[in-house]
Structures are given as C-alpha cells and as structure tokens.
Length: 289
Image 1 (cartoon, rainbow, N blue to C red):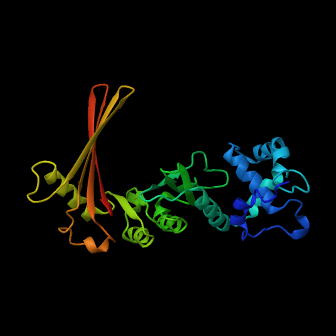
Image 2 (image 1 turned 90 degrees about the horizontal axis):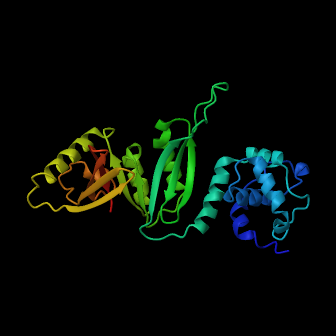
Image 3 (image 1 turned 180 degrees about the vertical axis):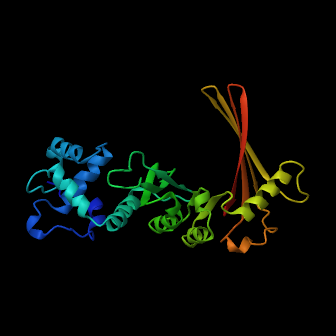
C-alpha cells in the first residue's frame, strides 16, 4: 500500500477542522475528501454517485488510502460536507488548485457571475444561488468561486474571490459590475493587470470613452496613436466581424489617478450578419496592459 500517494493533495487540507465528534468518526476526513474529489473529477453528480464511484474503485483506493471501515455511505459523504466550514474548505481547495494550475505570465483570468438554474426554492422562500467564478483560460480550470445571495452582491464578492487567488503576472478581466476603483486597486496590489468593461454604471467615464472612440474611429485625433485589429468568425449561417481599437492616450482623463495603474482605453466593435440581417454593437474597456 502506498499511503503517501494521496499526500500531495491531502496536505493542502491538513488544517481543515473535522466538525464531527471523535467517537462518531468511522471514516477519516482525508479519506472522505480524497474519494469525493476524485469522484467529482470523474463526473459524479451527487452523493449517491460519489459512493458508487468509491465502491467501483475500492481496489485502487485501498492502495492509496487506509479505509479501515470501507467506503463511506452517501449519507456520510453528504453529512460531513454539510458540516464543513465552507470558507475554510475553499481556502484549502484553492491551495490544492494552486498546485495544479501552473502559473504563467500573461495568463488570462476571467471573473464572471452566473445564476444557477433551478437553484431557487419557493417552498422554503430560498432565492436562486448566484455564483462568482474565476476561470483561467491557460489551464482550462475554474480557480475559485463564491456564492452570493443576489447579483448586486458581486461588487462585494469579487474582492473576496480575488484574495483567494494567486494573480501575479495574470491579466484579470471583469464585466461592468466589477468596474470599481477598489477592485482595480486590489488587482494591482496583487501584481496583476486588468481589463474592466465600462458601462453606464460609471456614467461619466463611459460617456467620455464613447466620445473618444467615436472621434478616433471616424475622423481621428491629431497626434494620438491607436492600435487596430480585426478578425472574422463564420459558421452556422452567421458571420461576425470583430474590430478592436486600443489607445494609451489617457492623459486627457481628469480622474485617471483614481483608477490604479490605468494605461489604456479599449473599444471592441462586433458586426453580426445573420440571414442577411446586420447588427452592430460596441463594448468599451479600461485597462492596465
């Protein structure tokens, strides 16, 4: 038996407190965590499937775990995870993910919020669950996520999520909800760059950036440089042309110093043609890159 094989993962959970009374512990917390994480990685969706995975892989699991009382029941898996401190587990999980996700300079980390379908419960008067997640494109991994009660709470959840991540050398992208001075400062403090979408929740900044690119992309502004890129994507009866303009001309913005490290303004124009019908939309960003 190679009981040390599971240690690289389990050592990241060493300081996770076992919430059970000692006399009720038939299965070690490490065994429960290891089986669950392996099962979820293999597609298990629910505690019954976690137990089924454990039973199916019993021979292999006994080579890396002690399993003094066999595979835990699905009720045990569910009860133990229900008792764990979610924030403490999140911190341990992030340490494990940091081992898996090889940090590379310039990696893109996208912060986004989604409401989980069918997560509301009218009978219990329970609102739908809204998750804020960090997706790393380089590693194809969700590096972390936090639940919020409402979409509006993303503003407070995003800084908490950022503190859980190793952002050094990364580029962090966030939609308009996260376009906040405090969030930009937190990203910079952690040694990362940012690209934040600007909408009308920042009305003054949004209006000024729109006016700037309207002029830059039509008549131009004397002495102002602007980088341009275009690509075309076609398929399933749809043709989309994306044009991107980027300028490092930010001196004109009077409140520039309020946005940590602000270096550039960005405009992305999407022209979609579907069944002969054309539509055009522009999105605007501020960046430290």
